[in-house]
Length: 228
Image 1: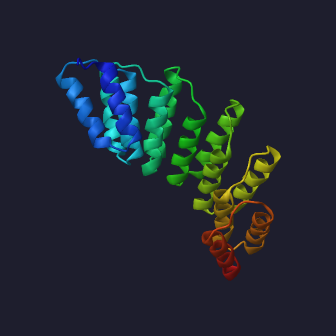
Image 2: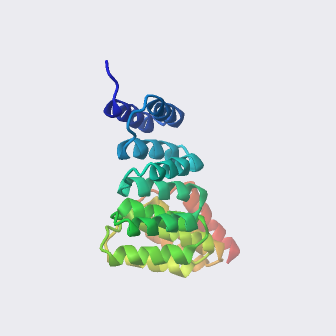
Image 3: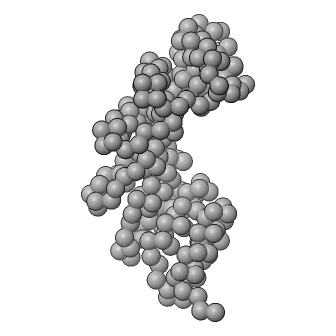
């Protein structure tokens, strides 16, 4: 049976879904050896496989090769690359990719922005994370629970408890659903700065809601009281 680009793309996509990043790269190398065309689907699946496995440098190498070969990048390509930055907290690189995306006229979506906000948060660039959040809302890109959680986590990491509470207020105003991560991150933000009253208020809201509380939720609330 003749193997072509479509065949290999299906195999690489299967590896991506199965978490087999090394096997995905083997298929890419085999395509090169057999002088088969590597297209956008090929690279997207391989980059995504590496990103999901935490192999960010390998993902960046694939993207560089993609650009060298002048293969067209799309929203999936850039979103996967920015997600790879998220893993290592490389927020400056993530922003560079986002700018390149705009310059190339590639559309940004909810996944792109969520990954970018998270990358900024992981890199302790909370102000930049909120700036990206504002741009996202201004462009009318869907803002969901993951978006808010990423922004709140960025504030939590920086001890910006007031900003975290403001985001929670906006969540309620926009009728975006809270989940366990929302409560944990907000309570933790308050706990880190000894704002025990605010922490208990959020804890009270969590108990009134139908969101399940875990040990980390209780521990953060207790720790806030100890520090206060």
